[in-house]
Amino acid sequence: MRIQTNFSDADASDAIRNYVERRLRFALGRSGQRVGQITVRIRPDGPSGSHCRIRAEMMPFGLVVVEHSDPDLFTAIDRVTGKLGRQFGRELDRIRHSRMSRDSVRLVA
Image (cartoon, rainbow, N blue to C red; front, side):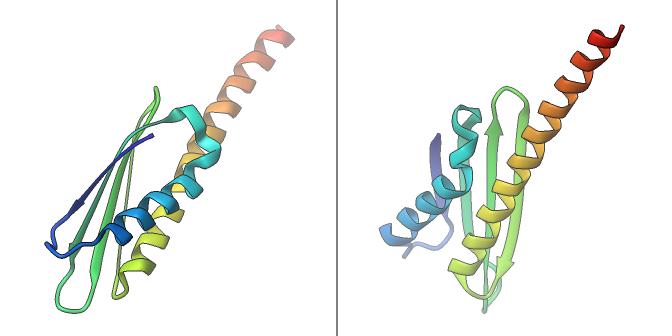
């Protein structure tokens, strides 16, 4: 898992970067080797909020993009990493079930 973090705000600290990485590792821990390059973009969303967007490669299947805006930056990060973890889980389940259905059809025939 390679993580690239981009901030539109110049005064972003290492604490935020570390927090993002920790939340991503927690959300995507079970996906293991399926996670490729991850790009996180955090920018101010008007005078009273933050917008967080995560773009993650799902090896070898494609790309997952999730976004969330919230007045609190840490809440936006929590929500978007949670969405990403759920999306990865759904995609992996879908792939597993499609493989199982093909195998079961072959066994019956």
